[in-house]
Image (cartoon, rainbow, N blue to C red):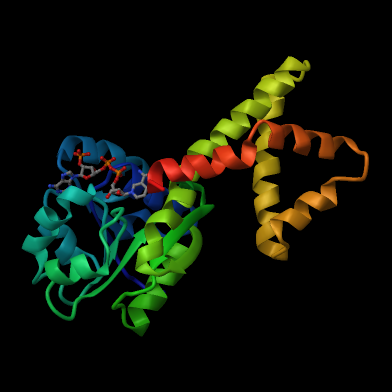
Length: 262
Ligand SMILES: NC(=O)c1ccc[n+]([C@@H]2O[C@H](COP(=O)([O-])OP(=O)(O)OC[C@H]3O[C@@H](n4cnc5c(N)ncnc54)[C@H](OP(=O)(O)O)[C@@H]3O)[C@@H](O)[C@H]2O)c1
């Protein structure tokens, strides 16, 4: 990333703070980040621990930042961004607002403004995020390099077609809640058999991280990863069968159906 870029946040709620935490953790200096929010007092409290500079208005963010992250609720994007059309014309705009994609920003921003729409998840705070990125974007080479360098340090960047971005972000954005339920369920099972809950949660959490890492590094089919742990007549395959009898796979697909509506 170009040296001395300043990052600006329009909105400094849960997602913006998770990103800022990840950026700081990955070595980006807090003082090169500036943020605004609706309530200035609360913003100051949230910004201070990260060294992020709070400002009173969105216009100040647009004026001071090179890369501006739109992190207000989707229904507020137009209201917050429209007045900044002129100021954002020569900036790189990165949206994290769910469901607000390229074509909508083309209507809101000035013609020629460089922008990309993304949907990150909260594990960006610990640099283990998954960031759905819309394939269609208008970042030039330098801004694209700045974006991938910055966001790539806090998560995996997955570029998808606009029509697939909603379902893709359901997996990465809602998935942490489901993974946490799996974690908790494994903890309950372990406690049932006398393993202290805190030991069980740590083991289960690392198992989830490690399985994910193994997939990402090996590219091995998930079915083959499962098979590799199931010896014939062994214990793991009994657990696999029990999960399937309880409708595990169907339950996971139903969870996505509940959101995607199919
Ligand atoms: N949270 C997630 O897991 C997640 C995941 C993917 C995408 N996103 C996207 O991230 C965006 C923000 O979500 P969030 O969960 O971070 O929401 P949030 O916690 O409610 O934060 C929204 C922020 O916007 C600020 N704000 C409200 N009106 C404003 C205005 N007129 N000008 C400037 N700032 C204003 C709020 O200020 P106050 O703090 O003063 O109210 C707050 O800092 C959404 O578009 C959402 O779709 C979130």
